[in-house]
Length: 275
Ligand code: SF4
Image (cartoon, rainbow, N blue to C red; front, top):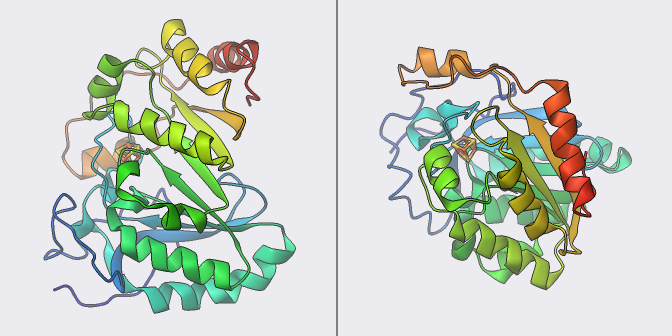
């Protein structure tokens, strides 16, 4: 078992690899108690990952393999640092007064927080005990894994819907679309505040029919407060090279403003609050 390390402040753009070489495979993890987990890093003042100013904790472990992923160093638990819940909450506590006064809170992102379900559950519970607003950023792929009690500790879900077309979803992420749509419908049924996020990748996800499919799926959902279009960029490309993983989007341009505008307008035309 890896030794407990230090939870590092930093940025999602930092490359972190090989920090817990004997960590389990993310496919096999069963964090029964969740007293310890694996984390990439945290940012202490994000304005992009939920309302107000946020601490964003990037957990390790993801079962998807998005071909445009900006953070492949969060895919494997072995690349993260083993930390304790107490360590995470101790760090969060120092920021709690500022977060409360700036109408912010805690967002757990990744990677995929639901890979470490019990670990993230404990952190969310601790954040709620500090009176903090809580949010998760998730692909929803493991949505069936979490119970309603897990969701009750969340004030907001940032749900990444990467495509509306099963074939495109599979090609882009390596996994099935259905669990994400099922999770979105569950959130809608329970009225859980949700922001849908869509990564706009030229030549991969920008097909008008693909965008329309997501827009028509999301538009009737009254719990969806925002659809956020996130233009693809190449800032994560260096990680693929450093990790020696084949990167297929070398020649893909960043999503230009005109394309982003078209897609936002498509969502708005379907009746979504989009930005
Ligand atoms: S779900 Fe997120 S972390 Fe996982 S591969 Fe896709 S973009 Fe990367």
